[in-house]
Image (cartoon, rainbow, N blue to C red; front, side):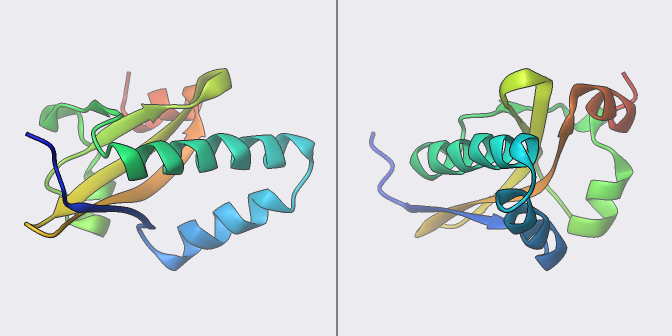
Length: 113
């Protein structure tokens, strides 16, 4: 069955959105990262399940407290970067909500690997 729901992407809060906007006008490396994140956004608009589901036992408490998540997913970006997002939806739409992005080393720290 084809999912006809509207698919869109949002940011967990305004500071996350602002950080993304600032990447676009930053140095070369930051602009490159912004391009990777934009590709992830485009992919998530097409398929919100593009990322990998993270098991509940691994969820950092900060996401549960700050965003009251009921699911958590990871989208692998190039060069070892990770984008963390959650999904919210109803019968009309699915929203991929970006919570954070970071290099692999910070990802390992956040998830206590």
